[in-house]
Each structure stands twice: as C-alpha cells, then as structure tokens.
Image (cartoon, rainbow, N blue to C red; front, top):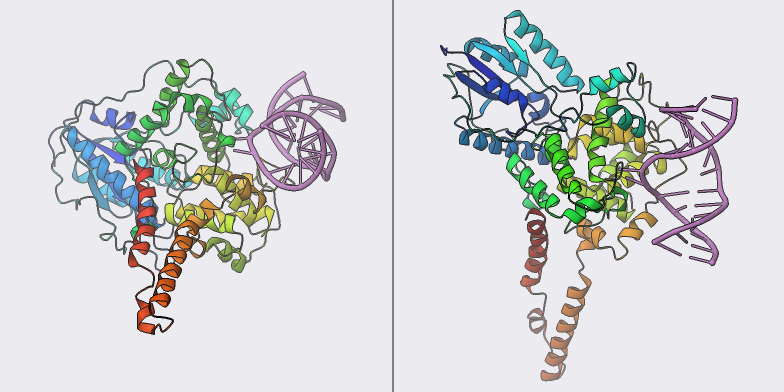
Length: 506
DNA sequence: TACACGTTGCATTC
DNA sequence: GAATGCAACGTGTA
C-alpha cells in the first residue's frame, strides 16, 4: 500500500495524453498515479462461434487496433515517467480490488454515454462513494455535453441536425486553447498483489492472427492519430473545400475523407482538439465550406448522434424506441449471410463488404449503399442485423453513430424519403466506371489484370510460335512446359497490393 | 394547420 | 454539369 495520496486513472475510451482532463485531474496533487486499462471479457473474449475471428462484439481488426492504441498509450505514459497498468477481468471487480489495495483517494475516468458504461459506471460510482473516494468523470469525448443539449431542448434530444446545431451553439471551451502539453506525471506506486500485465498481444488473448492481407491498413494509437490529423489539415485547400457528399467512395490510394473516425472512436484523437485545428485552418483561408457538409460539420454530426443516442431509451433497437418507425422487416438469415459474406451477386455491394471484412473501414457513402441494399433498398432485412455485422467488423464502430446511421439508412428515423434508393448498379458505376475498386476487393475478378494478362498471353504465344517454327511443329509436352506462367507474375500482384497498403499508411 | 426544409437518389433532358 | 420530374416523408417553426 502506498503511503502518499494515490489516484487511479481508468482508461476506457480516451486513449490519449493530449486534452485528457480526467488524466490531468488525476495527476494534480497526487503522490502516486495508477493509469489502468482493464481487458474486459465482454469485449475481448474470443468467440469461436462468431462468423469471423474475434470476440462476440469485436472483430480481430478492431481488437488489434485497440491493442496498438494501448501500446502507444503505454509508450506515451512512459515518456512522462509513468506507464500503463493492464489488468484482466470484469471491470468493476478489478477496479474494486485495485481501489482497496492501492488505497486510492481519487478515481478519474472520462464520462461515457453508452448504456453499457452508464450501468458499469453507476456501479463503480456507488462503490467508490461509499468508500469515501473522490470521483471525477468529465465529458471530454464529445464537443458538447449531451445532457446540456437535452436539457436546453426541454428534456428531449433534438431530432434534426439543424435544430441540434442551433441549440449547441459554440462549444464552451472554444475561446480557450485545448491543453495538449503534459510534461510529467506522478510515479506509479507499488502495485501490491494486483496481477498487472503488459499490453497483451493478439495471441496472448487467445486469438490466432489473420493473414496480413486480411488486416486493416490503419494502425491504432494517439501518435498515429496526431500524425494522420496533421497530414490531413496540412492541406489547407482540402480542409477549406471539404464537402462530404462530394467524396469518391471508391477511392483506394487516397481515401476521400480523413479516416480519423477510428481514432475518434477510441479517443486516440480528441474531437475538441481536432475542432480547434480545423477552425485554425479556416481562419487562415479566404473562403471555406460550412456545416453540415464541411469537415467541422462532420464533428457536429458525431455530437448530434451522441446526443440523440444518450437521450433515447432503447436507441439500439426498433421495439420500445420512440423515435424508430415500426416496420415489418424480414428475419431471413440466408439473405443476411449472402450480404455479410459478399455473395449478393452485385459486384459493387460485394466489393464493399469485402473491404469491410479486410479493412474494417469503408467510405461513408459505401456504407450507405450496402446498408440501404440490406434494408429498405432490396433485401428488407432488419437493420439491427446489419448493425450487428458493422458493429463487429468496423474498426471505428461506435455505438451511438453506428446505430444512428442504421436508423437513418433504413428510414427508421432521422431520414424518411424512402423513395430515394441507392442503386447497387448505377451508384457504383458513377464512381467506379472502370471497376478498379471492385476488382481490388473481389478476389474472383481480381485474378485477371488485363494489361498484365494480355501481355503475358502474347508473350507465351510468341514463344510457342518460335518453338513451333524451330522444331518444325514437332513440339513435345515437355517443350511446352517451359513456356508456362512465370512465378514472378504472382509475386508482382502481391507486391502491387502491398504497395497500396504502404501508400495508405504513409 | 400550413409551410419550408432536409449532408450525399435516379433517370432524363438540355 | 445543371435542371427537372419522380413521389412524398417528418421535424421544426410560425
């Protein structure tokens, strides 16, 4: 047991050092600081019955992204004289033991609006309060406090973007710079008998890692998040002219958006810091786009959905959800599986679903296409089923935003113009007229690279003609074998897709 | 009760 | 590439 005053910083989302008020408060005036992350079986336990490798709720890509984020968090804590303490088990049980064993006086964790954390946090708060432990749980995952907006609107969340923006106004912190510089942290005290581990690997958690080709090209962590954000905003013209609906969902080498969503989801990047950085860019250009289509507008959408999700009981289901249209969706598992496993027969749809499996990320409009197709567009399968597939496989899967978008796309809430349907054929043709996107992800069609294949065909024919001429038509089977496909051609294909991944990461 | 409006539809026409 | 018809929804506001 440590003798001085000890604080515990409980990381869940908010896996960052910059703009982390809970961490700062935990550090202030404490002799010892215990930064803790609990590996929660609820999210992390392998599920052998799931349709792809991973836990019941998370596919392997997102689990890997989380572990990478934790390794980076540990490194960043070490730079400040601290380190990350990883524990395993049901979070409240693990925490109660730590609070007792380390004689914690202050417990700090970021406020979380999700029902799972609301229930968990209430349990933890109740215990800590009874034990005389101070609790600090600030709102820092979103730009605004969802509870404030709901209160301003008379107790109910606004149901349209415009009314949300009107209610929200300017963020309270907008005029003062966000804290991004922590210079040191109190040391970690004695951990006693609590079973602390390093950040586990995929294998440590009981998973068999997937082929590199099936892994997401996006790496987790605060360092990568900040690098990626700075890279995006360095192009001032791009930021100023950003118009979400005008992006190309089939763009492979350079995605049409920032791909910061997974970093915002885990809190590797502070949405408030990102907001300030965008504002800074906008101040220094002559003209720029505005919400809802601008880059800043995207952060407001995120807050809008967080607010509605927080203020709506049973937000993640159709029944007992007062903002959700009641619709007689089909419960057809064959149709669901055909969609999920990229067997719809529509290359545009199937390619997007393969991108989801492999990358755990697709462009917003690509998500629209496959979600519309599964629900109101073609298959009429329940949006909750599609939601579950996205929730598992997306690296940026976020409870509030994922559910909100499925409500939107299925015309169950927010959006109701059900005669506007994304065509699984013409929409793809518009952006991907040459089928580059489709061929990249659909293995059957990807086998043939026309330029390469035709060149090779011509080469073999040339060689065969030469041989026929030389041997006067008396060509044996042995002779023909020497003319076949060269193994280097296969390697070239592999290297091509590797190079693409490298480009995305750089 | 009426009216304006809605981040991203499609096909056709000019 | 912009404009139009298609058919027509709910939210928010007056």
